[in-house]
Amino acid sequence: MQDKYYELTITLDDTYVDFIADFIANIYGEGLELGTGKIIVRSESDLTFVKDALVSLAGTLSNAIKMDYTLEEKENIDWIKTYQDSIQPIEAGKFYIFPSWYAPKEECINIKIDPALAFGSGHHATTFSCLEAISTYVDAGKSVIDVGCGSGILGLACKKLGANVELCDTDPLSVESCKENFTLNEETYDKLWEGSIDKAEGTYDIVIANIIADVLRFIAKDLKSACKEDGLLILSGILDKKEDLVVESFKELTLVQRILKDEWVTLVYKKEING
Ligand SMILES: C[S@@+](CC[C@H](N)C(=O)[O-])C[C@H]1O[C@@H](n2cnc3c(N)ncnc32)[C@H](O)[C@@H]1O
Image 1 (cartoon, helix red, strand yellow):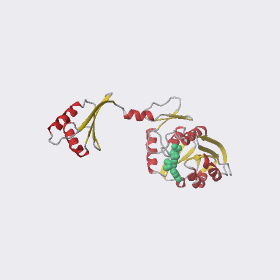
Image 2 (cartoon, rainbow, N blue to C red):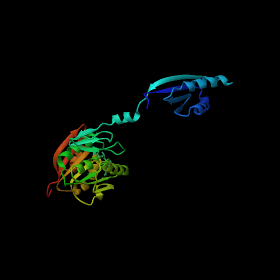
Image 3 (cartoon, rainbow, N blue to C red):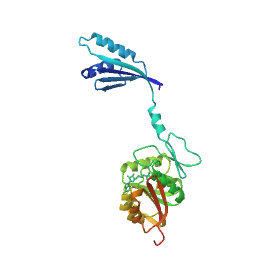
Image 4 (cartoon, rainbow, N blue to C red):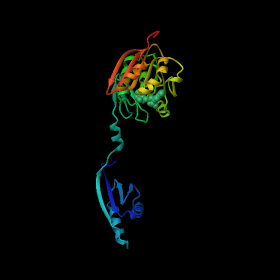
């Protein structure tokens, strides 16, 4: 890619746009953009010859077509690089979350996530706080379910710590994205399904759910029954103004930690033995 490119803008009566565009396409077939009363031609080669050809054409036509020309030299932008530069890696707890065009970081647990439609790049306060909680509470050999897995980032973090991981999401795109991210990280999960916690078959040492407060309340009973006695629930996606509602739905559990980041609350609960 060259540092500069040329942009020729032709302004003319809108009636002639298609006619002149056809003429340009015959002598130079690339980079044509048509607008109302306007044609733009872009190229990394000098476009003076297109302008000269149009001036000659206008001179030979019996019906004069009035055209104005602006030929500018512009700086070429590498859009892919510009986009990639806008996606920055992030450190959360023990984890370093980075897109595949960055290098991993030796002193961290690395998770590669490329931007996609599914939620979960690590940048949102709720994901960030969950990763902090996972760093504290998840150990090798624990069984974990990630409810509302999105990109799979939280389940992946648990897997990297040596846990056995199941995941689910009601959104099929998230399930696909989660599969792709496990493959990208060369990790495997025990189970992954489209749907929610009600389809879980087992009970787990740690139940993680970063979903909005209203949904957490709606599925509270299933989340609690999926958690083993002496196990933990990591709940996030709770706007501080909705915290009381969630607390009410999980009141028989013991609150172990509350993390507040921006206006988002993450609650870590313990399900006591015989609780
Ligand atoms: C805020 S995103 C969390 C994504 C990821 N776990 C993270 O922490 O970044 C919430 C996810 O929950 C999913 N979801 C919403 N309602 C759900 C439900 N009732 N059961 C399971 N997943 C649900 C959404 O499709 C979405 O992917």
